[in-house]
Image (cartoon, rainbow, N blue to C red; front, side, top):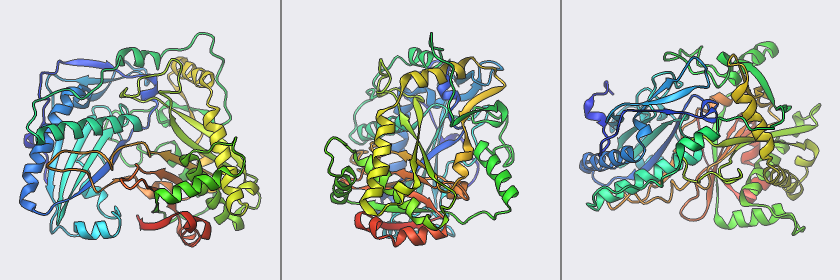
Amino acid sequence: MGSTSDEFNVYPCIDVQKQVIKLSVCDAYSPKIWAKQTLFWPLDDRSKAGFIYDVLKEGMSRLLADVPGLTGMTGRGSEDPRDLVINIPSNGPAEFTFDNLVGKHGIPDYASLKSQHWPMSDVVVPFSPPGTMSQIFEGASFFKAQLNVLNGGLALCIAMNHLLTDGASIAEIEEIWSKHTADVSDGKPFQSHRIETPDYDIRKRLSTPIDGAKDFTHVNWDLFPTEKSQVNLPKLTPSKETALGVLETAKKEHLSNVNVQAEDVKWCVWYFSAESLSKLKQDASGTDKSQWISTIDALVGLFWSRTAHSLKSKSKGHETSFALFPINIRHRLQPPLPSKYIGNAVDIVFLNCPIAKLEADANEGIQAAAQHVRKAVSGWDQSLWESWLSKAATMSPELSICPNPLALLNIHNIGFNDFSKVQSNLLDWGSVLGRADRVRYMGNPNMFSNCAPTVRVHPRLADGGLEVATTANEHAREVMGNDEVMLRYGKLITVYA
């Protein structure tokens, strides 16, 4: 598509004052990436696309009034790399592009996408708003969207700057936009849908060292030069080379040292019905009623144990498997943070399990993995997080304390993200759009080639089921796709690059 113009700029529906929002240390430590997702709707009459775009545009105008930070630009408060800000202009815009992709080479029609369970092969770039395929840099905006018209449907890509939005924040912003769009559809005047939170006080709390906090030491965290860590904010649009993060840099060095070619990695999406999830939870819990296991514990246990089982022939010399996943700490902190707070409030949970236990047949392996997950999550330690925050906030600006990426270069380890509580598949966008058919996330699987697999639990479906996407090389796709235990609970519905 061509260059953007003012026709694609959306302005807040009420006056927004020029202001500067100081981000927290937790925000500064977030990945410098665009978090992107695409929502799909059927469209029986293509001539309605322009009208639908206008309705979404007016809904977005109201969203920007509710969350003015989305109109801002990424900036620095000082030379300290942790001191990052949102520069909000007076009544500034956010970008919402419109692209008619009907008939474009390589773009599938909606019926084809739906029948194949919405694979994202070849559409991530054309679906994405301009400027969201690169890393976040100084001056980058915080919110962009693009409505793509397909033959028979619509694909709305939403891109959010991770500096302001973790998974819970993305869900909150999406919900606010949907409510405003529903109001516009029904001809209702503007009313705020944002629940007010004391953002200044929260960000200050997430930046302030805690009196009496112990010195932070953890086997899975390490010191890195800030300019080579995830804390670093590039001053200009980064080149491919300078955009390489800690993990990518370590991976390039690792592959060079061991003389291994990059793997062909794809996303594999599994579907689990509500009934099969109930059965999985029961099997993962075992006979010990005191060992309560959640549905997510059980899902993590299934993928962790069956991934280990698929690598049995390659496990010589490896005794332990390592897993990590981010968790929302809003409700875990004491006193808790408001659940509707828009910002980064996440900690990383690490856990280890003997590979022999994971490789055990069927239920034994699932139970061992699920119990390790439950123990790690329920045992989250606020004092340890406080010691990390105190160190991160006070150490030399030339250094940053980040998770050590080397563990993620071991294929016997695994990473998880849980978006099951996000309402993307359930939100009502009003009489014009209704509920989306599906949401898809837009990460590049090749980022995870020659790495530990990553597993993403997608938002809950209307039928109560869940979709789970995992990265897999050719060997893993073959073994997991024919694994009797996996197939007992789930169905592999689509594979894409």
